Image (cartoon, rainbow, N blue to C red):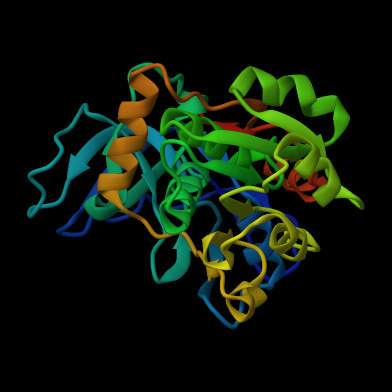
Length: 305
């Protein structure tokens, strides 16, 4: 099969020919239609997560997958060949990722593909969608809340905006001015990020906000403290120090039930996945470069023919 491989930290990803993966008892073999690209993918490839993850070289990057089940392990009863699935295929070590024509994934990481989403959209949902969903849960966002979403036009932020709106919350989202109309289309009230952000938020919400989600790092937690009355409802996926001020740090986990809930939101017309760019598998290096720029609106996806 064809797969993208990394031979050493810092090397350019290459399209290579690799053996087909074996299917474990609790796993399925998936014929990949598309693989989502996330910033963590190039960070792993660069060695930035070496202290947290075991990497076995050469490895195939990628944790997001959308495709069709070809084979199931002997213990699997949840899926059958021909089923269309999506997955956040993160395991405890990095070796057999999703930038490949064939992927094996444990059933605990999978859910059925939402019928309303294209393959590219479906591949962009798992990691970003679960991050947004679990962050909103950690912040306790629900009906009647006003929530501030930092980096609201990005892959995670754009999904968090929609999920929060579906829960009955009012959303104020930070983004560059070029993305303000995009945020309005998702149901958020946009504000420009940067110096003076707390004043701009209070111009929209004079009493402040009930919760804040930091998807970018930098000054976001400090700015959130200025406009949030309850520090325990500040959640960050980018700043470990958030706990020191009373907030919560969230590192996304694979969760089949959460992923199923996201699919149900999509099929109910309450959640879509904005796809910024689709690239063929052979252009994984270009996908990394675009992701590293940090200017995408929504998701980058690799398509597999």
